[in-house]
Image 1 (tube, rainbow, N blue to C red):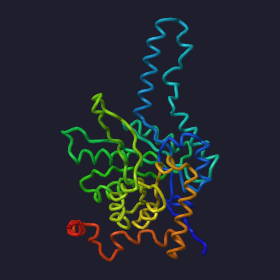
Image 2: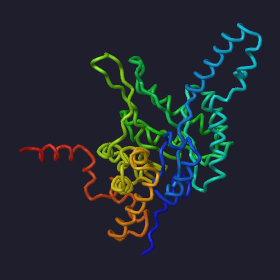
Image 3: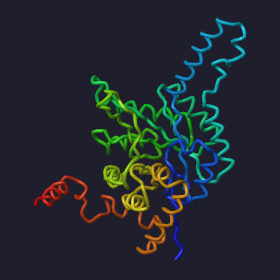
Image 4: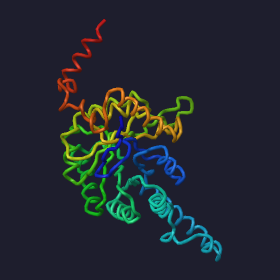
Length: 332
């Protein structure tokens, strides 16, 4: 039985529902080629952070001011701040080179901090040839005077700004902290989002109790973290007019299958590739095929969304009634 792993994400045709999420692995063109060879459906490039770019520009300007006043030849050692790429041109060049090297879609990732930054960099990303753009709004509302409506407006304004700037499809990488996730999802689609990525995994600090320091250590996601995005993909599937991507806890084929059953169009992973290598994509694709053969599904479309809230016989399983059952079942 011929098995079809193809899917559609934001109008882009993918040969596999397994997509490489934004991570430093995509900084190397050779890695991107390996991802295609291993069977990735698409690659989301590492994020371009406007904040980091501006910090580098300021640092360069400070170096110039400190050195050019000391000796006349100082200008020969440092380029003009306006001409210094600080990684921006390298990012756009990587998009161009990747589009020449591979056939799978290349999706850029952008984290801006100003309206000008979102507009300028989004436009240049499109001009470089990216097939799509993932808006990575890495924003924690830590201001105690800021209400929920203000936070939501920030996201919606960004989407509207980028949508008015580019014609390529755009996805929004969301955090799970909105008080009314369903409503926010609908508003983002109305603002111009073609896809929603659930969820952005904020890297939260830890404490060293011996040195009394704040630690910024990276921890890979684990498979047990899929439950929250699994819930919301199940709820949103078939009810919002956009693509859905799952990007938390994808450690193997089991998580891929579960997310697709919930209604995701694609699943995104990086942690699994750090743990097992880029070639692990091929293993996951094959294991999904093995499961499809066992369950007699000929294509991803044949089982995508069959366990979303609209399609299950017990839709309350996603809501409070199920919470009560779980507590009852936990009694000794």
